[in-house]
Image (tube, rainbow, N blue to C red; front, side):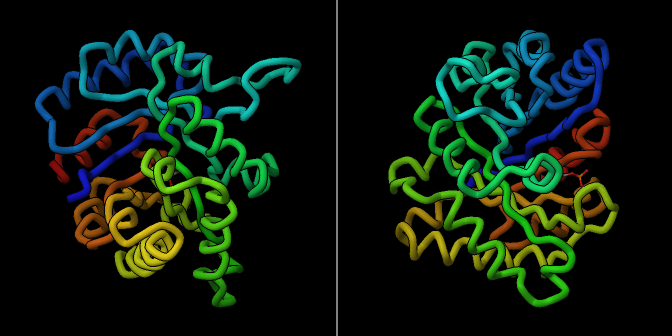
Length: 251
Ligand code: PGA
């Protein structure tokens, strides 16, 4: 049985005061929840502050990106060790905004996934098709390709650290959620691919989150799908009430 996993992706939002208010609000609301894994992925500069707010709670801390080199002359980048140092458990890698706005390639994302696992972090590895790719019938091919390339060289032991997030790009921040069926179709394909790349047993244990305009009103329907094991939540994770409601719906 896969334990449901909800992660909030705060993106480039909040300020120091807002970050503490959001984290403390969630700690209060979710005190009794033990049947769902919950994480918040916070801007780098607020990680340490939010870590303090989350201490002695069930809510894990995550970052939104990491660099694959351990240290050195990489101005502006953050290493796995630095993230561990400020109590991060998870790190989002390959988010569509990094792929399509910042220009990250599958090869770079693969290096980051590999470095994160070796560095003791749990990657939330994101994949998803553009609208034109969906409309031209290429969704399965595009997502399968991202999965294969992003996980190249990740062995059967290491893959167990990974959560996959399927986030159709056209659904992110648009209010246009994938239907439960559209999500299930892709999640099922990803799990089938993992079964071939690793083994059915390993594929069965890997959590696959859906992301893209997930909100309280569509949480139950999305989570009803047999292969949807959680959600990666952007906009709705910025409101204590919405994010807490989503966690409680699943719990
Ligand atoms: P959204 O973002 O929930 O605001 O659509 C999801 C994500 O980008 O992770």
